[in-house]
Length: 513
Image (cartoon, rainbow, N blue to C red):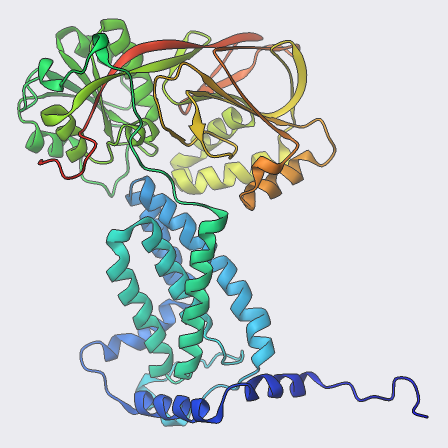
């Protein structure tokens, strides 16, 4: 009778050998033939750049650099593309460089086949199958193309060149890069299930004066009657100056530049005295100030996206200066609601809790390290150190991490509002992240990172037309549309229905420019 435990346990090398034998012999021979053919070939023009490109993709440095450029130099679609690309590369690297490589255990090709001038200075010590470089390249390129279809061809070409470079420099077989690319592509598509594409349909609004109206009632097609206040402190250094674009698109408009140290609110009020339509070129904070001024003056507002975040412009379907010009020439005027808290109007959302402190912390750092690195560092610091606030919300006491109040119902179930279908529904979108239970911070962060925050018992959401919030600890730090201030110990959030007229471009992109 055999002794218990006498059965031979396969060694890991045996497991790897069995896995490799799952590939039919003709496929293995074709893979080897393709490697030898490409490794000995001389690719004209692009051949000399392939070794450099292969090194640039080490540790995903190439993709990180592109993500930074998309973040600081693009619109919100660029930022979403960078974030989706980073997520896809992170997951892909974990899959290819750990379980996949360990399971296959394929040795690297013989570098002697490749001409010495092409060989990498240091051959990777990891196993060959699948190619991590090709997988990350395909993951990043596919993820970026999901958010930015206009970049599909250049990103596919760059990812393909990185994949070819791994064979051309002799560190991978063609089969390694084909399977790696397939893994990266699949994971990039998988991110859509965790983080769906945003609905970019422009939000609807109310009819002004009980009936439809075109922007021509207020300004001429060349912009005569429009006064634009450009916030010089908004935007990014890589984008074209919106004032130059406006002068080309709307030569009849008057443009006033507000310097960073200038009173923006005062400049807007002076501009409104002579304007038939008040324009503002800046981010959401600038748009919020201009909305109050335009509503007070009873004139329409034109929002021109020129800031870091441009949520209101996006809801209106204005992604570029050209879209804003179309709103003047062929667009229409709609009515939208305005939110208000502590005497401050807001066009998107206001908040209490961790977010106002995050904004203050970011602004203290961004002059030294840049806005987006400062935002990331501040987020990590706030998550680690912020204590919950004890607030009474509509008569009920809560220990609160975050309280977001949106001007209108927003789509999505995240921590903060993102996109609206209507701008005149007369409701506040209230989202509260409760700290009542133990480990609530860790649970909420986990749900948020996995895109399943709606399942968290710590998240509460409802709608209302007003909201009373008070703190027994004294004054509260408030934020509205990215601007912060020290508020009193009791505040009321409310809606001002149809208080603002705004210009919106034609809904169809087929409208002539």
